[in-house]
Amino acid sequence: MEFVRHYVHDSGNSSLRGFFSSEAVDFDPPSNSLRANVRKANCRSIYNLADGSTDDDDEVEIRDRMVYSHNSYELVRMMQVMDNWEGLDDELEEGQVDDVAKQLVVVLEQRDFVPYQLARRYLAILDYATSPTLGSSLSQLLRWPEPWRSVEIDTLLGVGRGALLKSITSATMRGRDAAVKAAHIDPGVIGAFGAAPLARGAEIVGLMHEVIYTSNICSGLRKLDYTPLYLIVADMVDGSKPPVQRIACRDTCLRLGPEFSAAARAVNTMGSSEAKATVNRFMATLKAATDNFSPTLPAPSAIDPILAALGALAGTLADLITAITNLPDAFTTLTLSDLLDETGDDDARALVNELNSQSTLAHLGFSLKLTLLNALIDGWTDDDDETAIIHILRAAHDYDIGEVYQLVTGVSWEALDSCMNGDEYDTMEGILNDLK
Image (cartoon, rainbow, N blue to C red; front, side, top):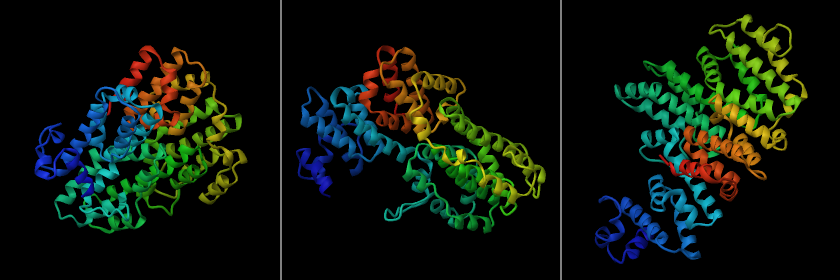
């Protein structure tokens, strides 16, 4: 109530009736919602602060109001009344712009991340003491009466499937820890769905396995840690895993082909000889597993090609696990840090242009995109460097809008602002203005 009282007093009134009829809430179409009117009053205050000249106190107030906003409608509307990115840059210091960009990442994630959307849809009362997960949200479907439950599951397995998996892929590749935790599905949830008499029970269980594999694979790819990825490949021929899980593993690996490919291309461009050998060996192993996948086991014809890709003799699943465990030391030491100091702007530009032409640039992990941006803006930038920077920002924006603002704060707005000129600068500003 103290929060509401502030806006009532700020509007020059002492009652809610006066606040509702004041100019403070006459900023957007009328609303009977107190919450909506508080948001409108907050946006109007930004408009008033930015109107005309702004002193240091005004800049701090604008920054603080925008950073303290946790509502996507409100913060996006604030950006609009600031005349979008151009106005934000004109009114605030570069560091303050970074602060606002960080908050944009948060609110856009809250708006667009599909597991958050499902939590708001399925959980009538959110327990903020124990953050909801995708598993706890999906569990509510088992309480829904038919036919509503069947319709909802059909939607999840239809138009909702791609959006859900893409959302989790992006959040994990971007290292958004809170979102990754929100995508967690406990094995008990999978067991409950498997035991329930559902018309498409096996398919929804398969989708949940895909969610888990997506998180696990992308966690490894983001860090270029291929150790767990080899063990995931082994799941495809592990007879102790149910067929629905092994199929989900295969399907996830195929769907994440652009992510695997982009990471491999980055390592082959920027990495050492040992790093290249590590990644190329894994890609050969992955291809052997997916090309020879068998829904039914045992299938030596599926295990043997994987072992061959590892340079081992034909054998059993136990032999495969042993071969993975005994991989050369280079396999276990490859990390992102191997690439950070190796990239010059020529290599970075060549890699960006190649991935952009192959439409896989968006699928590169956030840390690798950031590495490329830092290489491109280091020192003097020419038109080709600026074009490559635009490719990275546009790819990030078009795949998952929050990532473009995450990249801005990663390299700093000051660094980007100072290295871009002319048409390229205008293009960059246009990308940042588009909040969808």
